View 1 (cartoon, rainbow, N blue to C red):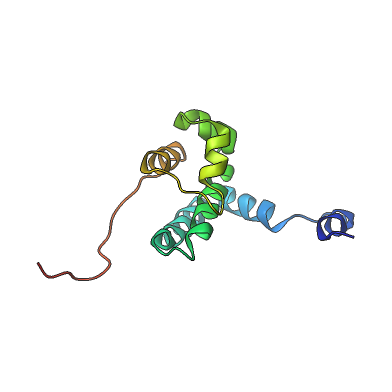
View 2: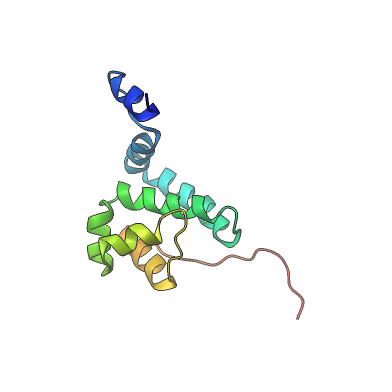
Length: 115
């Protein structure tokens, strides 16, 4: 029996992802800090999938992927692909999704560079 079928048999069971989205929706500050930490992983190829899935979870928490895609001016299918573990979203897509959920992209210094 598949794991998903077993979970569905447990009364009141909620998937990890569903619970994650609920918690992010219920606590805006948690969602912001969660996304800040996750976005730091975008520059690390081995961790990029987690960062994209985190942005996807926040988008689901604040409107759903269909609504966020429409507001961002991209197709739902393109957004699903961009925010998948193997996704490679453009800067335009990242900025549009962040803006749609009321956030913006920012830059901080990682380490000192001498000119």
